[in-house]
Amino acid sequence: MPRLSKAAAQERKARIVALAEKRFVQNGYEQTTVDEIVKEIGLAKGTYYYHFDSKEDLMIAVSEKLILETSTKLNAVYNRKDKDIVWRIRNVLKTYQDDFYRNKGIWRQVYHWRNAMLYHRVAHISAQRFTPILEDLLVEASREGKVEIPHPHEAAESLLVLFDLTSRQLCAKTDHARRVRVFETFRFLLAHILSEECVPQFEQEWKEELVATVRR
Image 1: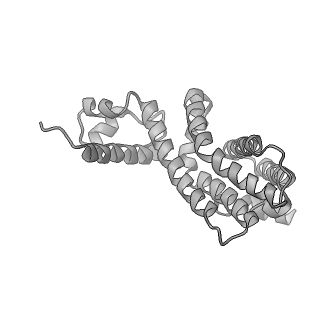
Image 2 (image 1 turned 180 degrees about the vertical axis):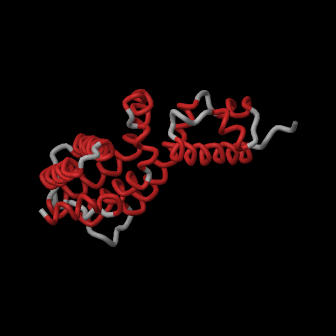
Image 3 (image 1 turned 60 degrees about the horizontal axis):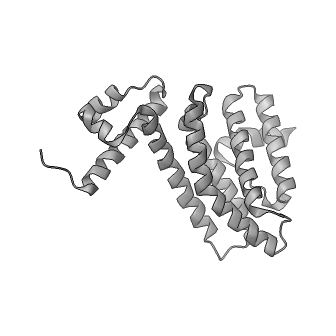
């Protein structure tokens, strides 16, 4: 059999990742097997292991794909130089969290207690992608006097931890009142770390918490 070109091999790998994302959301990470994936896509099992060492590596690839998609959106907002720094911070934060909830079918599984090592690998990839964007925005905002941030790099890291913790809590909690309290605490902390005007009006899956908060 002739060897695939690099482009063809990358296309095949992307097909595996796309199918895995679909199956992980539909059936769950634990319930989905490598055998099912290679059978559905029509590959030999050895071909699969040419691209991935394990099912965990495949989930990492799925996570990296989603992180890259979000990073591309964040950079687009970051580069809107026609907008002021507060608008850019607010919309970077909104895009980050809205994308998390759009892909929560995957993130709920990455965050599962059984998958601690998987989560730590994904968190490291996420921090590498997102910290520089937030840091640059905070440096610019500090320079303009819009926020008071003594250490932008550490503040960017802390914001990601806050978003991460809040997202995990909202994914895990089923009690509505508790979810509202988590959301209110998140907004309170964001406003105190940055400023009230930097806090986005989250939409999509946040809508339930927003409506409940307004009615209280």
